[in-house]
Length: 363
Image (tube, rainbow, N blue to C red):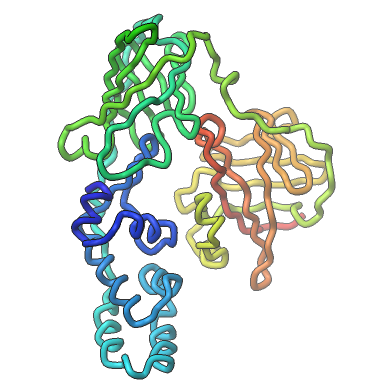
């Protein structure tokens, strides 16, 4: 259900749910990457109620987050609160019993997997740049929209793909890596402008079959290329030595930009996960003189014409991104947090996400 419907179920303002999302205590089960709409599962009403009860006896949101989602430390926090709030001991004991089994949120979301390998049919009038002009939603103001932060969509010649978009006549095709689906579009002239309405298959489509109409206005008819519209970093930084980075590093975790900013992660805990853990960026090896080799899935990228490094950065020349890294020592082990500048960064205008690595070998 959308955030407005969920807020009514909980009897709370939307702004409170948005705050809880940022605090990491009650996150949506799904955020549409194109519209920014938040969606919740009905089972999360119980999570909201438990958060309210824990707050009522004085627990902070940081403590609540730890109790809901961490495997350890719950008893320690309860005992601390008992000492501080003796007069609420009876209510606290009841809540501890209720929390002992944890809360399981049913994940009912199923990604779309349509056949979008359609033959290309040209539609010359749509080639160029389009800007979002209206979104139809009665309860939530999206933080992002179709086309990314710039709120613009490009139709490249010959249906060429960029980021997660491609097209053929009458269809805007989306391939996010986890979902593939085709959205119908139609155009019409109003005054001297050309408009497009995309029938976007947002979250509700999976349940009701209803699409969300999104309107765009054509800005120009330039024949852009994917490289022309990509965001580019300075990948020609001078080499600076960093003895600490030399060696082989294994990926052990992935952080969103929000997690990194708010410090919602445990590096040591990530290192205990099984090797690989389904991560796409598997490892990186740094050698003397600025040479490095990366392993993405089964693809190995090496050679100075493809990528190099300098102190504080991996310079990925093959896609013009300079990925900053930082190294931290925890309990005798060294960890690296490195920017992950995917298509969301290059074409969507979003902040970088991050990979976490643990050092496996020093040369």
